[in-house]
Image (cartoon, rainbow, N blue to C red; front, top):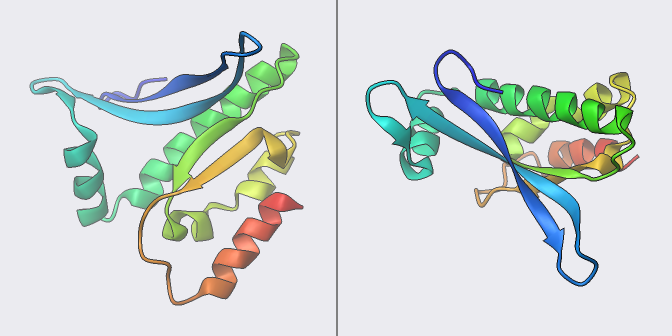
Length: 134
């Protein structure tokens, strides 16, 4: 899926060489600027953080991934998709609720916490993670 501004979520397959099959995927955000072409993540992510758009970007990624998981589910393709999340985006996400509303088991979504400082409210982070595990 691509936005009018050129943002798109791409899926990078995770392949099991021993069994010769796709066992999952990772959702990756990419931005193709109409004038400047592909913008490297080393520029995109700091810019998103500086402008305070991380929650909006994460919302777009999670919505796209949940839609893709729904499509895969209807085709009986049972693979998880991993998304990168900061502690801040994980607090706000409500991912467990969104997965439940979409009729998808939480095990289909893998969370990769980005390398950022853990926030002061570790209890809230634990609660967000536990909601996904239940």
